[in-house]
Image 1: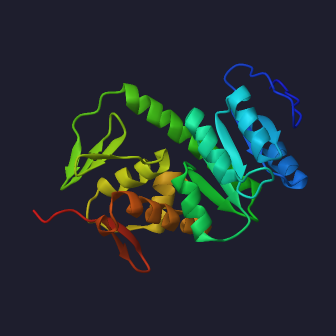
Image 2: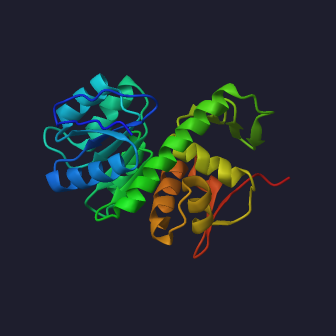
Length: 245
C-alpha cells in the first residue's frame, strides 16, 4: 500500500481508489490513535484540530468521509457539519464526549449519519467507517439501478430508485442511514424488529452495545415522518405502523 504522510495543515494526494477520511478532533492523543487505526485499515487520513480548519480541509481535500468531534475550538462540530454538508454531501461519523441524547439528535439533524460516544474502541470506529462507506456505495448504485415500483404505506411513500421519501406528498429529507433504517422497517410492516436485528441489518454491527445508536436514529426518524408511524415495543424493538387494510 502506498504510504501517505499528512500533517494537520497539509493536503495528501489520493492514489488509486483509496478512500479519504478527514478526522476532526482537538485532542492530539485521540487524533493520533484514530489516524493510526484508519491508516492501518487502508485509508488515507488528514486531520484538523478546530472548526475553521475542518471546513477548509473538507473543501480543499474533498474527503469521502469525516470523523467529527462535536466539541471543537473555533466553532463546534455541528457547525462544521452544517457548512460541509452545504458544500457537498459527505457521510459523517460524529463523536461526542457526553452521553447526551440531545447532542446525538441535533447531530443527526444537521446531517451526521452515525455517532459514537467516548470512550469507544478503535475496532468499532473502524467498523462504523467501513459500514458508512458501503452504505454510500449502495446508495450510488441504487440511483442508477432501476427498481420496480414505489412502496406506499398510507400517506408514507418510499421511492427506492431515487432514495426519496414523501409524507402526504411532501418530500422528507432523510440521511442515508435514516433511509436504510426506514426501508428495513418497511420491508416487514407491522412486524416488530429487535434493536439487535436493526443494528445488524442497517449498520452491519452485531454488538449489542450499539443499540443506543438505533434508539437515537429512531427518534430522529420519528421527528421527520411522524412519531405515530413507528411503534415501540418495550424491551423488544420497533415496528412500522401501517393503515389497516
